[in-house]
Length: 164
Image 1 (tube, rainbow, N blue to C red):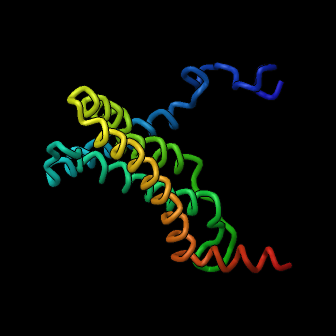
Image 2 (image 1 turned 30 degrees about the vertical axis):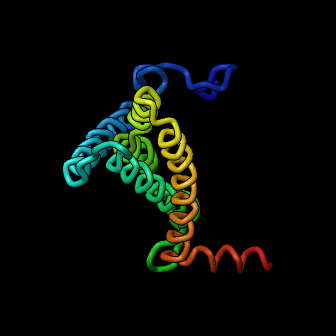
């Protein structure tokens, strides 16, 4: 056996909880707590009042930018300072991506705020916030990827690899 069921899911054993290693659960949990504290701190800095819930908007867009940067570091950066290949820790993505950024961003609050705007009769404002958040968030991911590649030089390495 390779530790996997026919379904492809990991077998549950003494070192897993629902098929997930305790170290991964701990990384996600600690990261989520850190991210939620960051979101709370930002909400204190940006007092969000209607007509537009700016704190949620800024939180989600900045989180989208950060996920773009993170994905470059996790998937494309493979070099140490000495130029040797290196891989990120197996807990990097669960801690930062799922934990910190999952706890930091708040798309459930975004959905509730859209609903509140609709219920208050501000239909145009609700749809502007709904669409604007999605478009701005996706743009932030692309800009985060570009910033990550520019900062790490992976764009140059990827381009050189493509030319070969």
